[in-house]
Length: 186
Image (cartoon, one colour):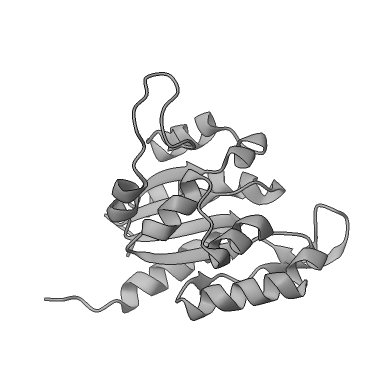
């Protein structure tokens, strides 16, 4: 059901960024075309080279390429996607999405994307359960952003609780279900 679908994967800074590699592999295996946009902080957790190799597309981080000045248009990126999946979605990025802040390429793309948006929150339990995060997620849900619920278990901090990014297989299944339910115009 994902064959030929154009999936834009947004990756934010957090330890769960390592799961993005597995997610890309699964999406590509399903026949999806994957492009990646990541925050500068995400590069501290997983390299653009790894993601570009798996997706078979250049990874976008900045508004322009510092080597040759080529512009990375958030408008064109947003128009390309059949779905925009932000996984992991940090508390910081979720807050900025809810407030409409566009201070990096991932967020400006979010504000201009025309497709459905899915976010897979990933953060420590205290951050996830904080009233600000709860309200931000509620705001995004009211704006028709699909929230992929995090799992419960041991977190990177050593604490136990809700906040683990959904597993890549679960995210792929949610996307399969989403596209299978979309009505064909024919």
